[in-house]
Length: 177
Image (tube, helix red, strand yellow):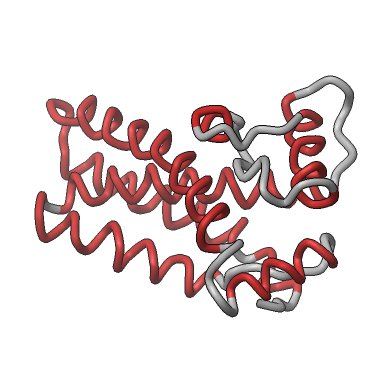
């Protein structure tokens, strides 16, 4: 949806704060003995985010009515502040990941899972912003991602769904360089 500049940039302020606070509380609750397990869960869900990102982009942003229309607008107006409001994305994180995990496994696991997914989401929105607004040096990780994303936007919208990684596009054979 169309966001104002404060709404567009709020992810870059709110998510780091939420991640740090949740991690501090989760690690404190875990204690020194369970901290390595907390970190392993968090890293695992950070990696899982890359698959989530791919699936959301490929199947939700390109096929679900209304959401597809908003995403199509992003393809046309690449630099426009179109995105998901922070309150909505945080609400989805809470309802889909944090609360179910807390009920099933307790606060420590829920905080680790949520921190991993939210860190992945922050990485995604940051990279996505950079590839649309920055001019990275050749050849760099960011330049490669920008070039891949430009192919998705301008040449083949049925390819290159991964924004932060090419891994799942290769696995599912949707990579086009």
